[in-house]
Structures are given as C-alpha cells and as structure tokens.
Image 1 (tube, helix red, strand yellow):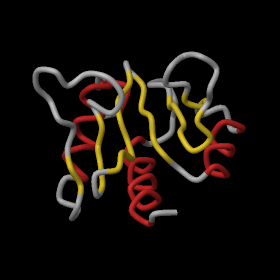
Image 2 (cartoon, one colour):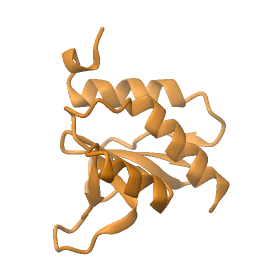
Image 3 (tube, one colour):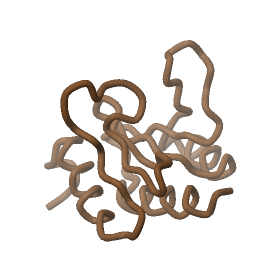
Image 4 (cartoon, helix red, strand yellow):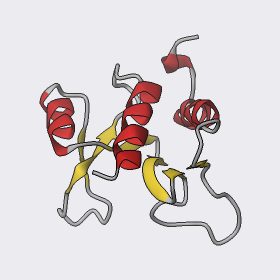
Length: 116
C-alpha cells in the first residue's frame, strides 16, 4: 500500500507502531488535557523526536540535515508558535512529500538519543 492511500494520522500511527519496540521510546500520550506542544509526540528518554502537527510530520534532526531537506524542497522549518521564530533543528514534512516518514523518524530517534 502506498503512503498516499493512508491518512497522515494512519501514517504516523504506523511510525509509532514500528518504533515502539525500541528501548526508551514512549508513544504519544493521549487523553484529556493532553493538548499543545508535544501532546502527539514520540519521545526517546522523555525527549521529543517526532510528532504529528495537523497533517504534517515534524522531526528533530541535525541542522545540516534540516537544511538539506529544505533545499531539496521536502520540508520547511518548524514555527511552533506561528510567530516567525523558526526552530533550526526541526523540520516539517508535508503529507505530499515523497520522503519516507519512518526513515526520517528513525533518523530523528538516533539524533535525539545521541544527545547531540
């Protein structure tokens, strides 16, 4: 099944399912009162590495990798407050992008777990 036949929520759910077996990975915390930054986030050692924001995947990667994805037209910098304060190590991937979400989430997991 191609990723275009899945909703962004289904795509993210499959990423979560795939990575849950990794030691230290915590799934998004659903439930009442869980809104705002990181409420739909995957974490490693309590640090966010990937999340679904609206219908877009947001991941934390090294700045050079984020720059490369943006240069290739595959993403844009994350602006969590929509106030122009862009986060250098976070990239937003549109649902239409050809970039594989699971591969990016694995990259983000390794980056955040390394503590760099």
